[in-house]
Length: 349
Ligand code: DP6
Image (cartoon, rainbow, N blue to C red; front, side, top):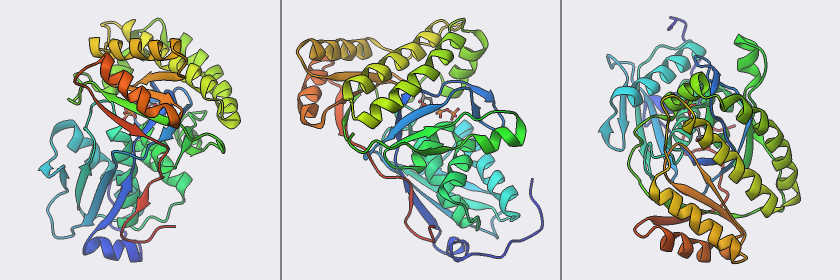
């Protein structure tokens, strides 16, 4: 919905008319997963989730308001965005216009430095960057909590990429406006926890089933879903305490069982959703081998075949070697905790 009312332009909005407003955001990897929505329109998750924002594969997004243009224009990695990806960005721009009371079409230019749609959280970094750049461009003055709520409307995992380090996304309670208000992200303190996350890119191609479609099917048809959601609640409480203690073994054990449980819910969906490939399983074997050899290493996987291995920073090179040996040909990237989303041009609060 658009209205004719034009809000007073802010400094960022004025700059958005010229060079545009640019934001950078990093992907995050959930240690306690979000899987399933209880409200698809408002993008409200069923379960709380907790993630680590990474220091690799940032997304850089520029939003430029274009009063003279007949419609929005969206470019992804230099090419016009198409299909679902384009529709999601345009829906998000509509939300920004509704919230700001402005009506100008926008030009959105997004660049991912990591693979897009391969279960490496490109939608998390993408919508976090779009929320920040878009809010500034349309003159919305939002604090980080409100930005995380806004980013959630693009992709629920994006709410967490607003923050650096560890962040929780609350599923919230109630319905409608109350649910929308109650579902936001906030930082989780982990003062003595600075691990490595070794990313094994076994397949950088886009996934066959989007996470959105897969989670819908899982919620609707998997007999295991409710059991996983209940155990996830207990996992989250335990993981928070382990993060606070800086206890890598406990964090890793909980994260690994939470991720394997999430994949079990998908495997039990009808028809099954299977993201794990033979190379994924080979890396999981490599992780077991590392543990049996005395190296604390724990795996997590998202909506794709790639594996992320949590370990001490001092063990990262050894873990990277073991992972490469387990799945020859996969590329390996070592990540650490990274920054929250930030504005490159324009005004940030
Ligand atoms: C497996 O946030 O990509 O990575 O909200 O529909 O955009 P939408 O889904 P998305 O799903 C992420 C799922 C996950 C787990 C997680 O990041 O918590």
